[in-house]
Image 1 (cartoon, one colour):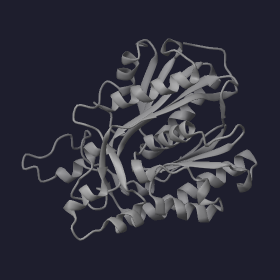
Image 2 (image 1 turned 180 degrees about the vertical axis):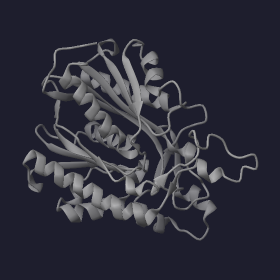
Image 3 (image 1 turned 60 degrees about the horizontal axis):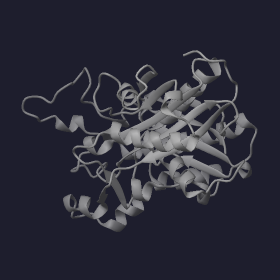
Length: 333
């Protein structure tokens, strides 16, 4: 669908969804008797995370999040022109999870595609959607993300076993001023850190485990924790500082920061570096863990549901993801 272009793009509604299953640290610690609950909370800020049931799919969670967002926006699914899905682990490689979701929502003729920018994916998708509306390609878009990271987390790897959880989040982007004004997202990366976070297996180079299954670790998420910490702190801070400069704002002008829920220690270091009090960071990591591309949208949906935002609040989004990918930008509530 081609629409009249609009230079103003708003988020008209947001929503999020999590599975019912809770995996507490105490359960994961059974595989690591030399570790303690206090240590894990100190290192990550995570106390528990949600795990999907075997019969639950990422598309299931995405559909729930989208329905919440549509209700908040006051729109019907039939008014939607397209679905942009950000995920690093779709339910199946082909066709796209966006297409599966479009069919489920009853809009099979909407444009629909997936993108993968890892933990920065939802912010990349917001910018793609914003650009589509500005160009006139669409008027109303679903920008959604869903991750079932429990399916690719090695329960025997202490570097990752405590970090990841499952969840979904969505926003409805619309042309015009009826909603919360979305400004341009700044996007970037550092491909020199390609190996810092990766899942080597499952692609064309290594589609299946070898017959002896000695390479199963390649099919789980892998992380160089020291490298991630160093470059994530820099990347988050850079995105916040670039957003402030691009928008002509000072730190005191910012009401809230909604970051990718990477790790509490990382984000506290970012807070100190940029000079924005940690109390202004919207944090859901203690109960949901790191949900990759879904985490910013989930934190935004949770905060909106809790009613913590006021009209006119300036909110900074920021993320660092595998690749490395960087993203950051401004939303005016």
